Amino acid sequence: MTTKIIMDTDPGIDDAAALTMAINNPAIDLKLVTAVAGNVTVDKTTANALKIVNFFGKGDQIPVAAGAAEPLIKPFEDAARIHGESGMEGYDFGDNYGHPIAKTAVQALHDAIMAEDEVTLVPTGSYTNIALLFKEYPEVKSHIKQIVAMGGSISGGNMTSAAEFNVFTDPDAARIMYESGVPIVMVGLDVTLKALLTDASLKQLKDMNETGQMLYGLISHYNDVSGGDQGRPMHDVNTIFYLLHPEAFTTKDLWIDVQTDGPAIGATIADVRGAYHDGKTNAKVCVDIDDEFFNNWFLDQVAQMK
Image 1 (cartoon, rainbow, N blue to C red):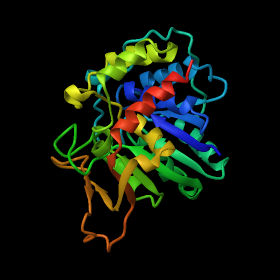
Image 2: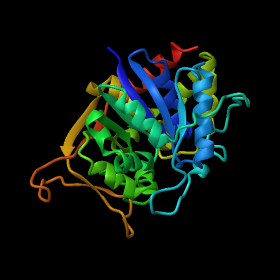
Image 3: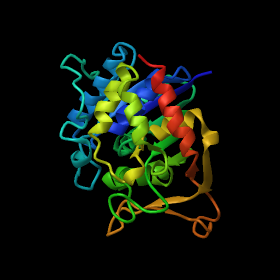
Image 4: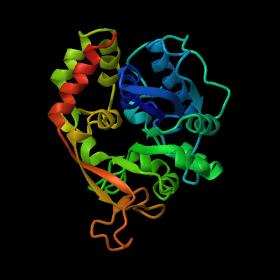
């Protein structure tokens, strides 16, 4: 039985790796990709999503829609310093990678969700498209099985000491998503900074196959050094890994509040004592991961690709 998903993404190098895993795993049925401004501007993230879909010959099967060009309220700040000016430096995908569909991301999300019995949303960028979707079409919430979101942290940030990038980019959208009532799995820095692709693994990719060469080129240009000398964090890939291997994660059910202003803007605050929401929870938060399993799984997946 396959898991039907929609990816809302801002490629980005680790997003590209996450799309690669989702497109190629037979247990995942990727219905739609929507792009949002985040790592780079939305015209670039849309093009990058198309490049990955086209690389695997899925341009006529997996539609790509362009979404929000800026956060709901907060001024836009990209991460080109991490991912390069295009968002996916290090590999030449050529110029013939297709075009996004005519629908906006919000309309495409609505139509795809309502056409399915249950679908999982997998956001790996800012949550602006999802917030706009919930505001315009609240009826979609009951058709969403769960949201498995890369973002947030309950142990410290990477944009400030408190805030992770995806939430920091559009904290107001994150608050809307966490207050939506849809089941959420937070796949944040608490695990993604442990699930590192080692240098030895990266070298194996280079000689593995065409996909390995593509990923090697991208990841070699990835300036996220938050893994130190232990390896490269593949933040967004952890969402797909969770869907396929939830047993590799330790989770806690918590209530997450999102700070939307002040010096802690973008912080995801966990009510660890159950003191502020009458013991209620709104997220399953990933707090630990089998990092060795992740690293081996990553290589095994790529080895089976073209």
